[in-house]
Length: 125
Image 1: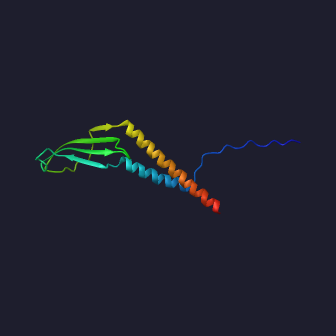
Image 2: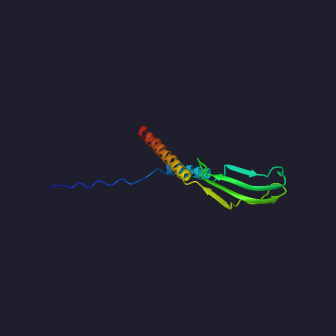
């Protein structure tokens, strides 16, 4: 009597719950770093610093400045409290690609590190 062995099951992609939670926090931090403005520049015409604001500018992206957004301002009497709504953008596709690859590398390294820690802990038991 010949018995036939079952074919081996294919491994599925699985991660531990603790790794998923850590990855969520890391992804949130990377999103914050990419979306938060790390450059806020104001330009004033010479000699009229307290009277006239020409434009406001914000730069987005991590680690390279991939998006430059600026807003023309016609506010008098010093600083305005108008919500920043850019009316012009400047994107650099190469910097966007570098930013995406950097974030993917950080997430992959975090995943591998967390899973390595879990395997080391399981091996000690």
